[in-house]
Length: 65
Image 1 (spheres, rainbow, N blue to C red):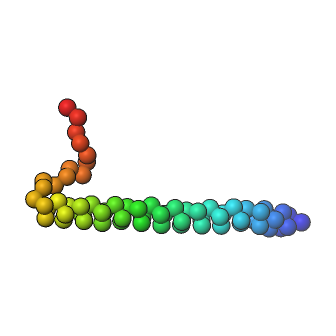
Image 2 (cartoon, rainbow, N blue to C red):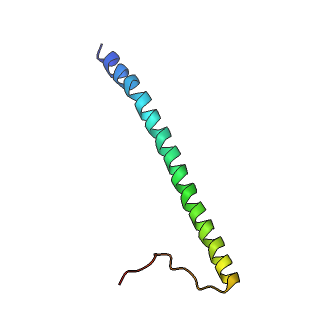
C-alpha cells in the first residue's frame, strides 16, 4: 500500500517536471539565439560604420555627464 502511495506521488509530479524542463529548454534556446543575433548585428553595424569612415560605437551606450 505504501508503495502505491509513492508511485502515485511520482506520477502526479512527472507532468509538471516534464513541462518545466521543456519550458527551460525553449527559453534557453530563445535567449541564446537572441544573444547571437545581437552579436551578429553589432558586427555588421561595425563593418558598415568602418566602410563609411565613422567612429565605432561604444557598446556600453551613451554616457551622461
